[in-house]
Image (cartoon, rainbow, N blue to C red; front, side):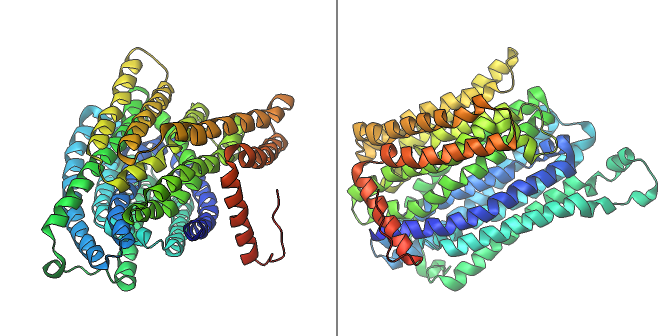
Length: 536
């Protein structure tokens, strides 16, 4: 139970962080959308979408490095952890330079006919893109520090840093909404003329600059903290250089990077394909869909942040059985966590968007709903990625996944050529998520010796049945009343009550229910309910 308690404690800390940051982030998005307007907001998320890619890339690369550190810690080899830190720092410095070169070359093609951007906004778009490239360099170099924090399961610092970052993003949004109103309007020229001649200092440029500076500042804080807190953060190549280890990490990180980068390019490619056929206004709808899906998925990603080190350390200690149990439990729990929020949003998406945003871009509702469906499917299989990585044989898995990830863009481009609507891209990516899930199951069975029958019965069947039952229960107010805040509340209440009952009795097995009751009892005793008897 020690591992379970540790995961529960870390998850609790991260959920407190999430409760604060999600609402701040959603409000900041509303401010930015209002301040920039739909076209500029779509333009920023098209060109500045590199930031979203960086978050994805940084997290995946940090997970790859953290895998080596956690396995070494699980084996009790602290000297090796120091060598891993040094070798991974050298490796990521090289990757950072390579990625910056690739982005600069790609930028030439983006701004010379590929992207559908108004002529008078090209200069601003190029400037924002350069801000993101600079941010890329710092982000990748700082990956080893992110891995150190995660491998030590220091979720308190991670939570504090996350809240601070969210508050600074809110400050930037407030400044963009109100501070930039004082731009040089005293020149007594039209707003349109001002935008053309002072485009380098308009709201979009300032927003891109401040967001890039913020990412650099936050990453520098991580580096400073790790050097003061952790002994393994000692960069000394003369003392800790290990050619064999560098080759091993490079091989693993290289294949991991291939899979991550191809998935990243495929996701960012959605924005480019949509832009080519439909323009920046539809990019704004896509950006909002990504924002909602990303914020709602924090529940599950928070759990995985706490669970990943446990999976890696179990494999490092030679306990494959515990590793698989943690993986399967993580698959179910992460799905159940996002399901709790996804169901009310799927049902009441039109009303929620009107409540949240002053001006809802066209197609936003259908984009959001289909994006959530894709996320639900993917969430079940994300812990299996960690298990495959923990075992270490990832070459063929990453190659297969990389080849598969480019298929949706090719299909979607062809569909758009034949006049299919913009939301077709989300349907294609849902099919892709199913194919990727099948591929992941194949490699989990091959390399981790996962029992497919056990996974289907104990994870997939339970997840599918609980979602269906809770969703049907939550639909009752939808068909019996008109759209309103009261209907939204009724959907949320019925969804929550049915969720608690159905997930507990159908989602979990008998043994899992016993462990859950023990865990809840421990948590209640820690917060003062020492005489509380937990019975169901």
